[in-house]
Length: 448
Image (cartoon, rainbow, N blue to C red; front, side, top):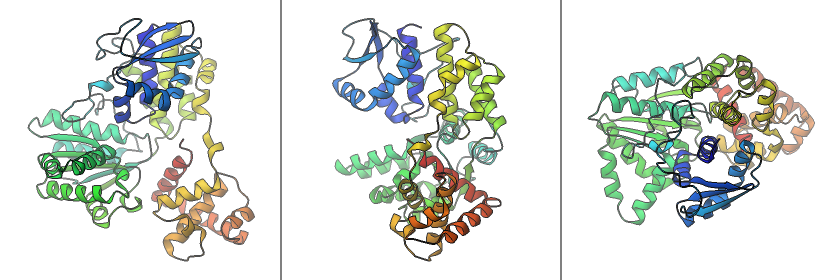
């Protein structure tokens, strides 16, 4: 594996761990200049990028690159290409039988990445309904399911589905103006427009859009001015039968600090959720992505990954990329024993980071409550429900005893904790919405 191939393997894994916006901002136009006696020299476009990579991403970069090449002990960032091999044409990444990597080919006008399409979107029981809704929208944008609101946990394919919708509409309706934008980027645009007194100009730009796709809308929570401007843009597009597509990690009613009028608009369209994929679907996803990259592994390896990565499609792809990098470096596919060794860090459960205070705070945030509300003696229905869920998770995830759980909540009797756990356990049998909410909370609890 030469320097360019090594760096593309590193980028492939970094891409799975940070947002597309951050990836494009900090890793575009970077490359390995040379490797010399255990030291790797990485070219960066400017001093700002150099400082940011050193402070923010150096640990991640080193861990990945050291896994791929154990001889590397240190990293140095060089502004420009003053030394070593100059790597040209960064638009051309791995071709033919190499890793395909096209993150930098994002369309500047639509912000859509062409790698996201319906051909490589795996459909299973966990996402059949949002997929069907997406198909209806691409066939007749603005006329059905408007707005379309898709929600689900991290790494389950929401962004893929949203961008696939956008790319298909671009292909089928070349006269329509389409814009995909993460909510954080939208917020940044609003702040810049306000600072430069260009808010009317920004609104005018958005009013010309035929299909607006907003990803991770939960990041508008608590940003009152941004929500106000988005509300006006939303209304203007909606009244003109322009298609609006939104994603979130949770349904509208449990997004904290979301204004009631926005919540009402979101719930007025089609709400559909993506759940976690079952074992068979996880294996199908792995095989599909391996086929895209023109590699293949044994069923034993696919099953091992699918059994150990159950809730995050992005992590499945991360494991696959690591095995592909190993195969390219050694010119031989990994055995199951090597696979287990290579993926050890991926598969270690992060439960050691969980603690009761963090758990209670996450539950409170998820249901738009204060931590003190859950710990209080309030009998309000929404607070009691959140408190019971917190007790249930303390028991199931942290293995706390019932008396200990009771003491965490202002010295409540252990029987209160037992009742709460039994109640939630019973509700989970028939309440798919509660199952999803608790899965989302657990994912946040163990998210680094």
